[in-house]
Amino acid sequence: MAPNKQLRMALVGLGYWGPNHLKTYYQMESVKIMKVCDFRPDRWEKIKGQYPDLTYVNNLDSVLTDQEIDAVAVVTDVETHFKITKKCLEAGKHVFVEKPIAQSSREVEELIRLAESQKKVLMVGHLLEYHPAVRELKELMKRNELGKILYGYSVRVNLGKVRSRENALWSLAPHDISVLLYLLGLEPDSVTAVGKSFLRKGVDDLVFVTLHFPGGILAHLHLSWLDPHKIRKITIVGDKKMCVFDDMEPVNKLKIFHNEAIRQEEFDFYDEEYVKLKEGGVDCPVLSKTSPLRLECEHFVNCVLEGKTPLSDGRDGLRVIKVIEQIQQALDKQ
Ligand SMILES: NC(=O)c1ccc[n+]([C@@H]2O[C@H](COP(=O)([O-])OP(=O)(O)OC[C@H]3O[C@@H](n4cnc5c(N)ncnc54)[C@H](O)[C@@H]3O)[C@@H](O)[C@H]2O)c1
Image 1: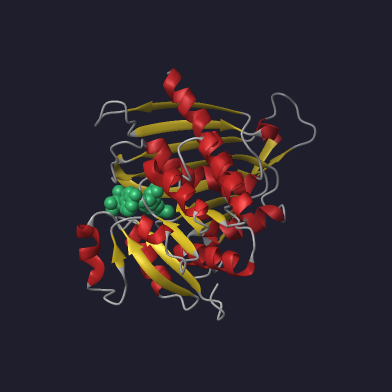
Image 2 (image 1 turned 90 degrees about the vertical axis):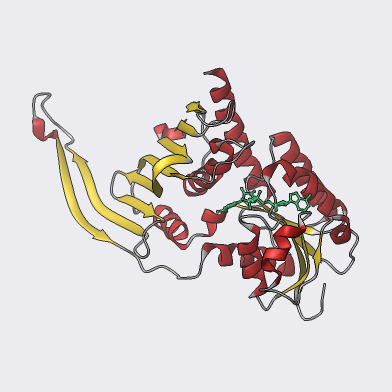
C-alpha cells in the first residue's frame, strides 16, 4: 500500500458501464489508476483521448502480475465475473466487481472463502445501496417512521439495454433485490415468477416476480428492457407512511406520503367506517447531490484503505444471488 494512503487500482472492462467507473476513480485523489484493461483495443481507443496519461493493456495477466496494483475494479460482462474476480483475489488484489457478483451461489461462496483466506476486500456493485434516497429510506425505516411494512414494489423498465446471454432478471433485478433485502433486513421465504422472451429464444425480456417475506410482507418486481417507458421506481407502503423512490426525478427523488389507514378497534361488519383513510402531506427530504456511483467507489476505496468490510460485501452478493436463483427456478418451471 502506498504510504500516502493512495489506492493503486486497475480497471477491467471498458464497455458501456466501465467508462463511468474510470471517470469516477480518475477524479478521486485517494486513487491512482495504474492500468486500464479491455481485451478489445477499440474500446480503449474510444476513451484514450480523455485520459492520455493512463496505461492501457489488453490482457488481464498484465494486471494480475503487476505487484504495484493493490485493487481491481471488474466492470466486465457477468459471464466473466467469477473467473476474473477469482484470478484477482488469487493474485492478492482487493476486488470490486459489478453486479451480479457471479452466476451461482456456489461461485459466490468460493469467492467469499477466497477473499477471507487472502484477507482481501470483496465488494459487489449493488449501486442503489449507496443511493442517498435509499439510505434516507433505510433511516426512516430504522426509526419505524413508516410503521409496520405492509408491501413494496418496484418497476425497472426501459427500451434497452438488451443483453444477449443474461436475461432481464439477472441484469435488472440485482438492483431491486439488493434494495429490498437492505431495507427490510429480511430474505424472502418464497418467490413466484413469470417471464417471457420475445427477442431471443431462451432469454427473458420481461419478468414479473412476487416475493413473500417473513411477517407477511409482500413485494413485487416488474423488470423489462422492452418497454416504452423509462421507469426506475420503488414504492414501500407502511401502515403509517408510504414512500416512493423515483430515480428518474431530477430532484425530489424520495417522497414520503403521510398517508395512513386507521382501523377502528371495534366495528360492525356492515360499518363502512371501520377503516379511516388519512391523507396527509408529502415530504421530500433534501438528499446529498453526490452521485451513487461516486459514493459506491469511495466506499470501496475507504474499505480497502481502512481495512473495513463493505456494506455490499460478498455475503450481501450471496444473499442477492440466492434470491435470483430461486426466481430463476420459478421461471424455469413455468
Ligand atoms: N450499476 C449499474 O447501474 C450498472 C449499469 C450498467 C452495467 N452494469 C454492470 O456493469 C458490468 C458491465 O456491463 P456493460 O454494460 O459495461 O458490459 P459491456 O459488454 O458493454 O462491456 C464489458 C467489457 O468488458 C470487456 N471484457 C470482458 N471480458 C474481459 C476480460 N477477460 N479482460 C478484459 N476485458 C474484458 C469487454 O471487451 C467489454 O468491453 C455488468 O456486470 C453490468 O451488470 C451496472
